[in-house]
Amino acid sequence: MKIEKILNQAFGPDAAVLSPLVGGMMNESYIVVNSGKKYVLYISTKQANEMVDRSRERRDQKIFFDLGITSKNVYFDEENGIKINEYIEGVSIDQISEFNYQKIAKLMHILHDSGRLCDKDYLPFERFKGYEQEACSFVPHQDNRFLKLREVVFSKKDYLTSQKKVICHNDAQRSNIVRTPNNEYYFIDFEFVGNNDPIYDIACFGNSSIQEGYKLLEAYFPNLTNVEKERFFLWRMYISLQWYEVAIVKHYRGEGKIHNFNFLNVAAHFLGNAEEAYQGYLSLKN
Image (cartoon, rainbow, N blue to C red; front, side, top):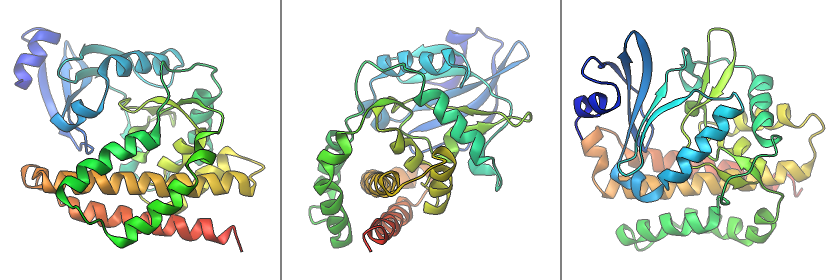
C-alpha cells in the first residue's frame, strides 16, 4: 500500500511524510506530520507479517502505554502490519554513545514488576525452530560454529524456560529505546512482546556488544550473582543465534539487494556475538 493512501486513511489528505527513519530488520519507518503534530509510521515487511500476531501486538502495546513507557498508538492496520504512533521527541539510543544504564534498568523494572501479563508466553525455542527451518531451506548444512553453540543453548532449554515469566519486550535492543531531551527513556516497537524471563530483555540490550548488555545487568541487579550472570550469557547466545538465522534468511531471500544492506555481515556479527557470550558463560564455570 502506498504511503499517501495510508496517511489519507489514517488522517485525511493533509498528512505528509517528513523524513524516513533508519529501520530495523522488520519495518520501514517514517516520521509523518498531521495538523502540526508528528507521528511515526511503521510499514512491516512481508516476512515480519508472517512472524507477528498483529492483534496481540496491538493489545500488548496498550499495556506499555498504560504503564507510561511508550507513546499512544493512533492507527493500526492488523491485516497489513501498518501502525502509526505518536512521535516521541528524542533519539533512539543506538544513535548516541552515552546513555544512563540506571534509567534503562528502571524502565525495564517498570515493565517487569508491573504484574501485567500478556495473553501468551513468548515461547523462544519454538520461535527459534521456525527461523531455523526456514534458514535450512536455503543452507541445509549449517556452520559448525553455529551448531556447537546451538547445542549448548538447547541443552539448557528446560532450565531457561522454567524461570518465572513476566511481561517482556523481547527486542529491547538500543534501537528500540528512545531518550528524550529531558533524559527520560521509552520503549518503541512491540512486535515480539510476550511473557518471558526478564533477563531475556537485558540480554537483548547486548545486540551491539556483550559489554553493554552486561552493564545493564549490573544496573538491574544491585546484588548480582552468578545465577543471573549464567542466564544472561545463555540468553545472549540464544538471541544472537536467532538473529543469525534471520539474517541468513534475509540474505537468501534477496532482501539485501532490495535495501542495499549486507545481511551476511549481520549474520557474521551475531555469530561472533554468540561466541563471545559463550566465553562469558564458560568463565563462570572456572
